[in-house]
Length: 127
Image (cartoon, rainbow, N blue to C red; front, side, top):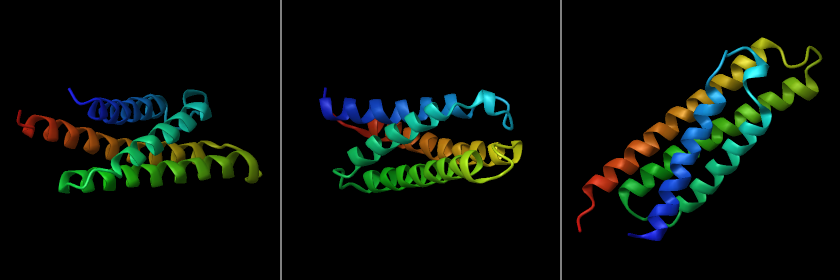
C-alpha cells in the first residue's frame, strides 16, 4: 500500500462527497445549502488539486485538469454567493441561489470524472 495514494484518493473522494452534500436539496432554497459547506468543498478541492501537481503521467494531467475545472466553478459559485449576500440589494434571492448551486453541480460533475479516473488508474495498476 502506498500512503501517498491513500491520501490522494482520500481527498478526491472527500471533495466529491462534500460537493454532493452541498448540491443536494431544493436548488433555489438557501436553507438547503450552507455557506460553510461550500467553503469546505473549496478547501478540500484546493488540497486535492495541490496533491495532483506531482503526478507526471497522462492520467495525472487529466485528473489535474478536472480538478482545476472543479476549483474554477467552485470559486465562481463563491463569488456569486458573495455578490448575492453582500453586494446585491435584493439579497440572496432564489435566482442567485440557483446560480450558486448550478456552478457547484458543474464542479461535482468534474469531481465525478476525477473519481472515475482514479478508479480506472487503480484498476490498471499492476503489482
